[in-house]
Amino acid sequence: MLTTVLLFSSLALAACSSRSILSENTAVRDSSAESSQQAFVDASLKNIKGDHRGAIQGYLKLLKKQPENAAINYAISKNFVGLGMLDSARYYSEKTLQLEPSNTYYLKYLAVLSHRMNDFSRASVLFRKLADLEPGNIDNLSLLALEYLSADQPEKSLEVFQEILRLDPKNKAARAQVLLMEIQLSHYKDAIGTLSSLIDKSDGQEKLRLTLGELYIQTAQYELAYKTFRELIMDNPDFIPAWLSLLEVSVKKKENTVFANDLDQFFSRGKIPLKQKIDLANLFLVRSSRDTTFTAPARTMISVISRLYPSNSEVLMLSARFRIQQKEAVAAEQELRRALILNSEDIDIWEELISSLFVQKKFTEARELVYRIKKHFPALKTRNMVIESEVLFQTGRYKNCASLLEKALVQKDIRKEKWLFVQAATILAFCYDRLDMPDKSIAIYEKILEVDPGNNLMMNNLAYVLALQGKELQKAKELALKAVRAEPENASFIDTLGWIYYMQGEYERAREELEKAAALNGNEPEILDHLADVYEKLGNPQKARELKEIAAKLRAG
Image 1 (spheres, one colour):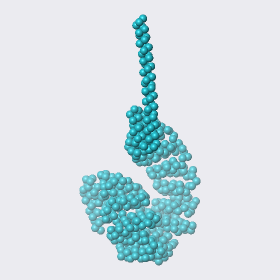
Image 2 (image 1 turned 120 degrees about the vertical axis):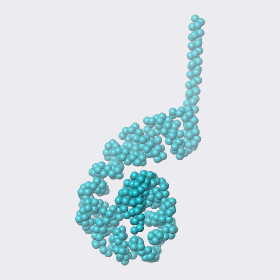
Image 3 (image 1 turned 30 degrees about the vertical axis):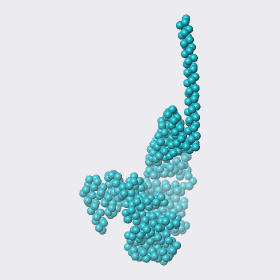
Image 4 (image 1 turned 180 degrees about the horizontal axis):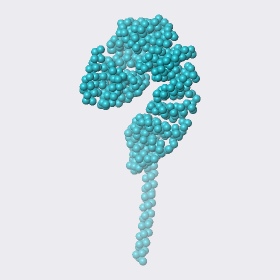
């Protein structure tokens, strides 16, 4: 039995020993947990006080003991954000999500952080996961749609906005966004359907119906466009935008008789102020400078308004502007001198007269006219400086011109008139271009675009100067693409885009664009030179020589 007793005793002792060890381990664990909890609290207090470095050190010590703790990784990430160290913040945020991939809070945090770091592609992937984890959440879908836009994936963005609309058919913001994107992506037929549903549900329909008509024009449905604008005018005979679009349709359809009849009706509207009639004619004038299809209609329009208002100085100035555009400078000068007799207090007339003299190369007369303007309008000091600078530029005195404009651009009143600032800065940028001072011209072009971001000419010029310098070619391409999208028939803009492709080594794309530019304006030597350089790179030296010879002949006159 002794053996048995001894065995039992040993078992009992073993049991006692186990209980003792268990008790000690539990105490150690409890002590360790309390220590970790206190360390976490201490680090969090440092975070609250703005001591992000101290907080990070505390959290990192904890992380060594608990590497799989998502909350600690997240806390470290947040403190790195507080220090502005976004790369480190993102590293720990990615670890957080690896540990808890379905945590929507961590997912959204990393998505926002990725967006902040301009990694729009990663952010869009994360927002897509977030939307999938919370189906039907319109806020998440909206974030995803906007992120796709940031990631330059407009088609995907449109799909998400359409998904929002299916979930919430009454969501006006989503419907408007769908319409906008359908138009931007040239999904005109889809846009017509979206817009039609908007018109049915909207009170203020004039602008929507106008846009519908414009979409019909884009899809070459001219009869429907004409009908839409006609109905708008019947409802509101004084709605100028509808008249403008109606006349544009007649031009597109090449129906000269219809255009003339509509024009007579418009000008006979007594309730429409003369200024608005002049403004509409001005729009056609500007359009004709970009699209020769509108040249004859613009001439007809100006002829009609000139016949109806033969002694109006603004109408005379309008007619003169068209004549200058058509290189009919002598007739323009005559009309402007008549306008000055009628109204010598309009400085615009004086300035247009100088322009007519420039075209005729009457630079001495232009200088004399500047002195007369200074005496006649002594209070308009800054504008007089800008007018004088035009004469200096036209006569090749670029240094003097730049010096004068540098003074003009620091005048207190220069920013009060946006157009005056843009005019002065534009001439100064041209001066710097001629003086081979690209860094200065780039800086001026950028300032102009800050004030006037939709200025297509400035976008094009900045893109071209950047390309010539071999600087920021991606930025140059983006600017050139914007300018070309805005004015797809502008040969100079297309030439710039083609030249940028050349600088980037994309010779086939460069050839395509420069061929377009040459087709639009084959009399511009610079375009032909650029195209010749492209053919040289494409291994066709004979074609390159032919183009160089044509360019040389054009320069020789």
